[in-house]
Image (cartoon, rainbow, N blue to C red; front, side, top):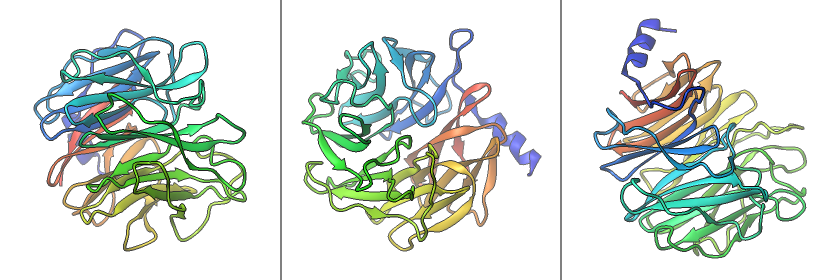
Length: 347
């Protein structure tokens, strides 16, 4: 490990603060509309939001979006954020006494004020596992979540075509022939320019916990048969609690990063898998090529378009989130022992 490089990287990271004494930010997620960066994370039982208007160099003081009920946090649980047309949306799973429900808060003034949380899952407590994904393109927003409305965990979703103002009915995305998909791995969602919805999730078929990809061309009403990612299967009698990440590549095709056993892999339209290195909890961005960040040991590894081998980003980091802010420019956020850190990734 190059500690001089690490020291420089750590000096460039921006810490998101302050928070109340005794609270540490967890599970950060980023979004950008090209001008503004939005960051959400959880701390205690509150959902927080911060904004940057200078591409991540400075941030507003974290403000509470909601502190009603117990929010789901940890192991890829936690809030998500997206720009949808003129709206800014934050989603999270909250237990207000009747089980976990997937709520969406909406802001039309850049995050200064927020609407009351809207429950997206149609059946009470069906989203109680707390694992979900949200993605938007234009005014179209799609949410996918692990659903427990019937025996076995299934993947459900819902679409909004008006920037989160209203939501269509819940639709089944996938149910496993073995009775349940992987119960503790977060799904991923991405939308392309034509409105195609891509969803990635960890399946459980005959004990194999592999990542699968499916797509919908009709606004999430129906999904095509799911296809396994990777050249091999991972037989596991437990849940790895690691669902990977999914983005749309420069050619309009989905690009995925995910974990099998103790290693991280990349999948795209050209190859079923490319090994990136040992690790877990990977995140992905597309900016003049593919950027991937993942946890190895107690720190974070990074592999950018110009890198021939992974390099260290930080010695203290976990659960990264990436967002593209301009061609060739990516912002990363992650958990650390000090709190939420944000940094632009260099070439």
